[in-house]
Amino acid sequence: SGQHVQQGQLLAQINPGVLQGQLQGALSALNLAKHTHTRMQKLLQTHVISHQDYERTNNTYLNAIAQVRTLQAQLRQTEIRAPFSGQLGIVHVQVGDVITPGRDFARLEDHHALWVDFAIPQSQINIRHHIHGLFVYDKNPMQRVKATWVADDATLNATTRQLHVRARIQNNAHRFLPGSFVMVQVDVGAPKTYIHIPQYAVEYTAQGSMVY
Image (tube, rainbow, N blue to C red; front, side, top):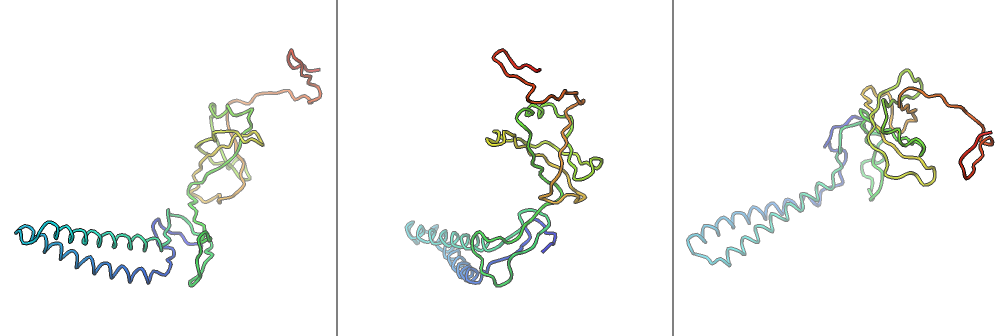
């Protein structure tokens, strides 16, 4: 728990004893089939055996190869390896536990680069075409971190009428942790001045909206 692991590092393995025994038997059968295949190949060249006998031996050899590869693949499926380098969280299983499909083993996070998910209202979705800068901070706006706009969703949220957006930040100093609440600052140019009016002062008519 809590260790830094490298991509491909073995984290845990389901008891492979039965498969390892089957693999040893399959390797022995493959070795015998290979020698028989080589011998029959030489006999075929001297016309001592028929093509039918050779094909039978060749099929046995190919089946032995397939059996070994199948068992090797099954053995790999008993291993849990790190899909990428990162920090391992708390491990939820112990040696000797019975593992069932879907059970949590541990979380693996790469803290060097993080996704930042946020939303912008429907009325402001066009700002994504005029962004001058995108920044993320947690407490102090003066310690903001530059972010890169990665992608936005294909549709608006039907309930909130907001657009889901994803950005990426470099987190080499490990300042942020996955799951943290952060503030997102979107720079779209020089600030503009707006006049705030109460909603009841707006009258909507067929000719347009009027303010009193």
